[in-house]
Length: 419
Picture 1 (tube, rainbow, N blue to C red):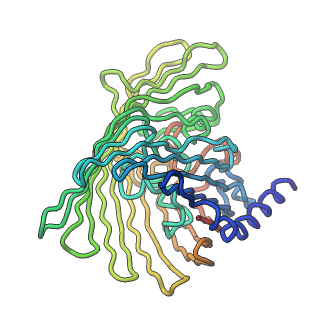
Picture 2 (cartoon, rainbow, N blue to C red):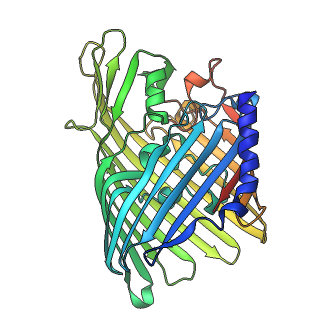
């Protein structure tokens, strides 16, 4: 009853607050404008069999809520500061624990050179650094093959610094670049520690990882160095942009084995370990029509220890993922779209094994109820039940006590507001 009341209350607030808040949150301080923006969304998910994203979707679930607020100001013509607080509840994830989503100081010397530092949004692919802005997207759920909602907290930002800039190349358009480095943050309420705490994977003879419910481990931290570079080309063709990102991270994870108290470790800094991602993407907009697509390849090699302290042999995976999407604004208040998303857990393993892939066909309608309020209705038709104790795309064995079925039909309804 409390959960239903809380959901109804948030939905009412989503409908009521934009007009109230509009007059309150832009003001001037010492001659400089201070901007405060806020956003929130409430979702409902229902699926035919499998529970998705740790929520009880097979019975219908409202456990899909997030909200945040950010403040920023232009201190000087070249210096800007800002920060964002974020909170969410997504099934077993988030658990209403607020976090500092990002906090950055940004100084732009020239158009072609600027620096920013703090907890900085990570530029990875088309939308990683804007995925917190639900109102910018057509979709209720972005393509989970490349933008997994259950791992949002560990990928949206890094603690460190960037250099960036825009370079005009005359008749050839313009280039935008970002080079960054720092430390990957640890989100204890994300899908990665949840999966390690609740499941265990063993590699079968055919190369497929079998994952079973298991609570023998407790994760305490997962962090390490991260660096990357992104280059975007705004081509001479109006509305056409192409880009590429290289991303490298240290996947060191520490914890304990509950029965013995011995250290548990997934090492990301041993000689053979690596986690490299290359993302290529394209976006084209003409009139009310938008097309975008992305392809990623991640080479992941990691080593873990056993409860006795012995080291397992390195485990390597060639992870492939991507999507293509098309959306069209039919009228001022109505946009429709569709995307097709693919994820392969290990390219070297059998492509016809449902535990090695997830394919997702999606149809969406977005209605902009007001300038600040949007409603999205979305259908997902998924094939495959890729299972992993470390890399998940929505399917967790701990959330599916009766086992996972090979196909999933999912309805997502999401009401969002932004100011």
